[in-house]
Amino acid sequence: MKKLLFAAYNLDLGGIETSLVTLTNYLLEHGYDITLVLEKKEGVFLDKISPNIKIIEYAPANDKNILIRKFKNIIKRFKFIKQYKNKFDFSASFATYSIPASFVARTCSKNNALWGHADYLILYNNNEKQMKDFFNERKVTKFKKIIFVSEEGKNSFIKVFPKLKDKVTVCNNLINDKRIINKSEEEIKDIKKENVVTFLNVGRHDERQKKLTRIIDAAEQLKKDSKKFRIVFIGDGPDNKMYKDMVKEKNLEDKIVFLGRKKNPYPYYRISDCVVLSSDYEGYPVVFLESFILNKPIITTDVSDYEQIEGRGIVVKKEEKELYKAMKDFIETGYTITKKFDANEYNKNIFNTLKEIIKE
Image 1 (spheres, rainbow, N blue to C red):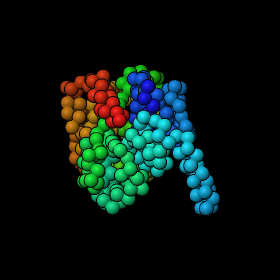
Image 2: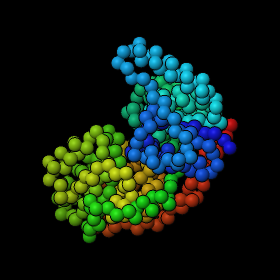
Image 3: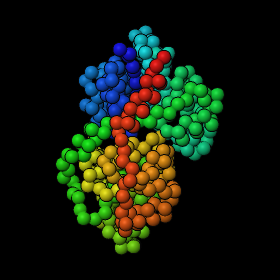
Image 4: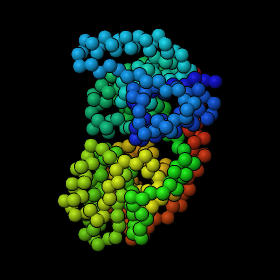
């Protein structure tokens, strides 16, 4: 039985964390021995990890005194290296942003990988120096493999790091379709299905990436057009208050509902008619897969992997007026899904890719 290790920050609510839980549980079910290393052993998804997965906490010291902090971290690193050096058949830093996760993955196996969950060139506004600094700080050249969840992320990385081209591959996120379907049947009490077109957005409230102002501006125009609709926002984040203030200023409180973070967002798909994604960039949008599985059409900006929307929704440019037009058309004429999603085939293809990645 091959021993695999994945390192991350924690298991709180988020796309990376959702993907990590699905990935580790799936690999466990398919005969691998799994260990998870977290900077913080916390988060709403902790109880979703199989009890047969070992969880280790590796948290750097955070003393205010720099010398004390450095000394403690040297000791911690030494102890970790002594205990886990090359003890695994494969190891991966799954939370790209975590520097400790990078150290853990490089320590635990020579057969290691760094996972990338975004198009980092777009993330850094095409500033190649900032992108280089980010990856060099994580010792990217010392990884045997570099995995991206989308072609866009891979291509941007190769543009900035052409010498690492042969190390880079794409592996989309796995999806637990049975769990999503089962969880979607749970009863919810904070909102009910109504006889009005309901749009749903699920994600972090972060304007730099998610651009939820596009949805709010589109809603203002739809209201001026006397269209009947409502928009449900599931999520939280640094710009949550800004969005709520904006909705209040535009007198849209009768059209837009904020329900906060939800451990189980899937019942809200059930009571919705269409999912809306307004982002400037994504890694591989998990919301795509969730929409496909729950048979909900999606309106999305042209983020990574938008090609998969064909027959399942509408793709628009990253502009408020384009989003508005698509939402207006949906209210007036609806949308019929013509391309069904086969989750088993999808996961099978990804698992084959994972086996190649894991293989020494």
